[in-house]
Image (cartoon, rainbow, N blue to C red; front, side, top):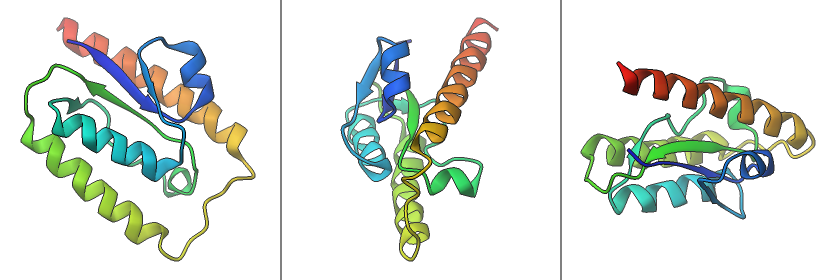
Length: 123
């Protein structure tokens, strides 16, 4: 198990040393994650948030397992997520004025996801 976080969140970058930092927006994070999945990584967290409000953020972190074995489901999910993101944001604006808040929420989501994943792997 080799966990990596694909993120454009500076708080995540500062806190963890296993971050694939993306200098870009949410869509760039999705595309970088897709490229890593095509090279053999698999999704640990879903690329799209549970809250529509978080979808309007320019900040996103996605946890992947960089184990280098092909995962068809992860490939389907990331490709579908990119299309859904593009469709949803087609007529909406990204919320840049609340970036600091989004970074904080995103960091908390990543921390919780990592705790749950570690607990799951110990089972």
